[in-house]
Length: 255
Length: 370
Image 1 (cartoon, each protein chain N blue to C red):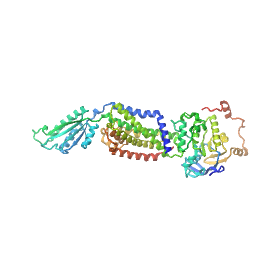
Image 2 (tube, each protein chain N blue to C red; image 1 turned 90 degrees about the vertical axis):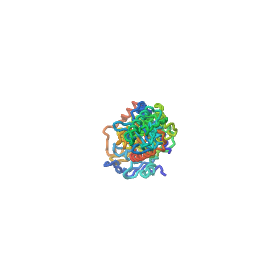
Image 3 (cartoon, rainbow over the protein chains, first blue to last red; image 1 turned 30 degrees about the vertical axis):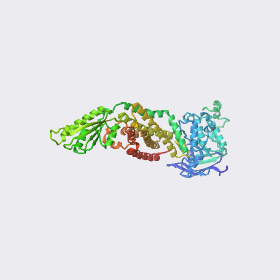
């Protein structure tokens, strides 16, 4: 039995090579219960490979990934059964209604859910009879999060959930992530957007060349940088262009 | 089991909502069947005749050879076998007459009565065959008989007629099961290849890999769905074909539909497995399509779908008789045209079985989620 203080994810010295390329080069970290843990880093840094090892989608060459007390390499099926996954390239069956997609995935986990209730959690209940291909980018991302929630996961993995979304849709997704966190889930997410990490994440791991080069809370990381005497090139203004855009176009979702 | 059912139901829904795929699955086979069915290929054939040789001596052999004609002029297409087999062929239309050579044929001093049985519905062929039989018997007798000149053929050989009303229905009836078999191949292979390869390239399969289900669950669901589709398609094609072209199926035997279902399922399983193997190997639609075509195109023409294997050169049929579609088309034709029961189709069932095992082994080896 795990308690709130036990880590729900333990990664120990994970390593993975594709041919000559080292994707993950000794990554270790822990994620606590109820935390939103962010992984940042440029493309090809090893974020997705690390997450896919934790998800049981990919075998590590060495090291251990333990989710909620279960070692992934011992029982990947058990791990898959208790996590929720949003992949970077997600797609769902066409010719099925959204409610049917959610229902099908629930059955794959042998979970009993009300598909419309799950869709309402991500604000898609009014689109329950639509098909996947008819959705906008933001709606597709929200559907894939809805599908990731069908088994009431212990850990939710979100791989670049807001890439390609407009500012309104991104903000709506942030709301959704906070809501899911408030519901008691632990969330691991990757992102390229720093303000997103700052906004959502309790702690951040910065990944570069398959290694974690920094790991702390966003505030602590910023303080560390400032303590070295760092000064931003341009004086930070009170508002950003993002704020301007949202102020002009409104916060309402467009899809 | 619940997971398997959920996947099967979902993929059935997807298939039947895809109106375009449904249309093409039925449109082309029906079009081909009706166009070819309206052409009358029957009249170009040299008539098929079953010859039962009770005498089995030099004289009777000489007669049979003469009836076949020579390379310059082919007279009759001759098949041999037991009397029962030959009468069955006549009954169900794969031959037009049975000629029985009596045991005393060619024995000097004996009067041999050749029995000539024909299908009354094919008077034109009867006349052709009867004339050939008469002329050739006469000629052969004059060449080979070791008898005095005054010993006339009329005194040595007689030809007695007998008539049946067969159920054979010519090329139209022959065509329907072939096209239905071809449609099983096309649907089985192409729908599997295109759905799976699309799912793979879009990442649908990747997402499924992230769930606790195994590949076997998913593939079993796919297999069941496509097998159901293939059987329904076979029913539609055979029924519509029979109505439009005005032929009866399996000599009216109700069990023929059960046998047809079994064969459609076996054929479906076989071509679905080939489809799974191709889609396991191919990364996207562009590489899958040519491979699927390379597999199906030769079989369309070499497996006796549109034309009987007997019109092809021997060196070709020596190979093409082992093709998966040949076994399926032959089996379905035996059931629908010749009124055979599935239990008599040893060759075809073994052939299909071997191909199913080979294809599934390759399919399992080739399957990839992404």
